[in-house]
Image 1 (cartoon, each protein chain N blue to C red):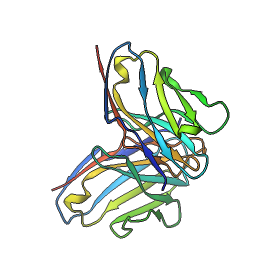
Image 2: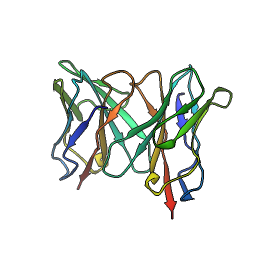
Image 3: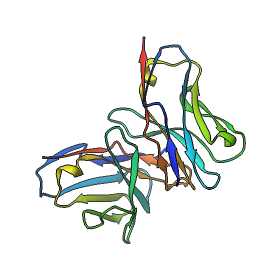
Image 4: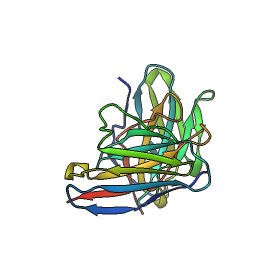
Length: 112
Length: 114
């Protein structure tokens, strides 16, 4: 079955610390992979996506993610977290940009 | 990127009544719109694909008679929750994919059925 797992429900980091949010997927073919961020009162915003090519992808707001086929993972990273990064983060996979399967999300809390 | 709005942002209705949620694409013509449902602490679940001028395509397990979708124009899709019950309380989100490059999401509608 196709699925996305985000093992960490809630992560707390200090401002300025590095961040890694985990995402593992189960998918029959090479999927399209996405990371979205959801802030209260706002729609999901795309941080980055992977379709093909270089497995290390750069996104907005200083985020990056690495596709590791052997581990079925697409972890999101940021070298230095800002207080404004506090939000809910969702990993998603799909055959294209349309039929997306989302993980359950990771809530990021940032302490000053 | 595309801007998607939803109205209302929050709605409370009594059990047994129907409620309509609007999704508007403000700067793109969207022949297809998507409706998701998000439970607390849960992921977004695709409910249906709304197709302009034709019937919506529902995902397995979603009651089409309960969740009526109308996509009458290229900028507006509506989701009507009919005979709502407390278990229908949820966060409903719509999205569009105008360029097959990414989906653009609305801010969501919080439905509470009392």
